[in-house]
Length: 374
Image (cartoon, rainbow, N blue to C red; front, side, top):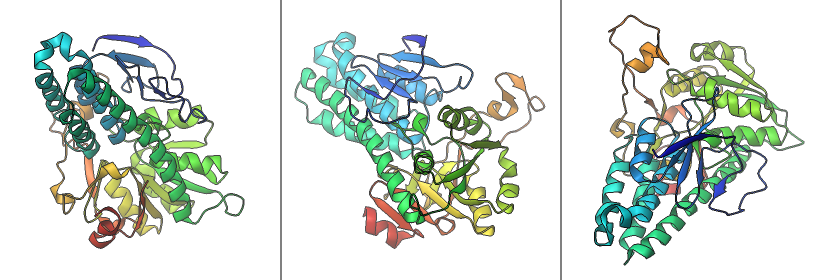
């Protein structure tokens, strides 16, 4: 990390591009400046809005590992910019003769930063293909930067398309449908993506079309992305949100008001199993019991057709201190053993819809997934 500064979030920045400037939201997770990348430190929200300025791939990899930036699409976009930074600074770091080795090393460091979200590896593979086609450092610097910006812009466009697909799949249309209440888990909004959001993007679209009555947001232990990030995003935009403890979800569903649970994903396998933030699986079980729709919203870059089912997904486990403490305040007996997986796997047979920018898979299974993504 090269420097830090505080500022508020402007509209999405792609190195000067005015694309998507008509979006009404002003929340972004990252800003690209051509020679540097700024990441909003999401560990400090909502109390502080600190931006970290990075000029090299090593710093980007560290920020991904430390959860400065999180959310599968945002991780992939950040990694792509990390490769672009490696190319820009390769000549200064290693001399022009070693620029290829410098970029290869950067890709390796970035790929080791987080194990579960497949978007990271998808973005790096895409950047690597461009890198291998470059014959000079100058060409690599331009083409890799252009590719990273394209990944960022495509993610935002995909979010908008997913929101449209989701409302159609739910059978909702402005002016003719009654507003509904939904429940969501973790953060899947502009902070987790290139802008707008996946699951939270659908919720934004419901709000924009006056089809949203109420959002219930799980607090999402142990990192509290729901309380710190999702509630913050929604309140900034005047969207009605009620924060609840994760364990209260069953009581909320039993009350009968919630029509859909809408979540994101970090990896979707060939049979439609979904890895997402820990606690998602239990929500799917609750949804089935209470006859509530369960929707997964994620870009096609999250789909990993190389894995047959969820049992093959590597599940990241983090230090138990994240459960025993919150910001240094002890919550449990010192030294108590902790099970702290970041994700769980929801079986496809508990999922009603998987929504991507390419289309919708209903009642996912291997045949339905192959038809859209094969």
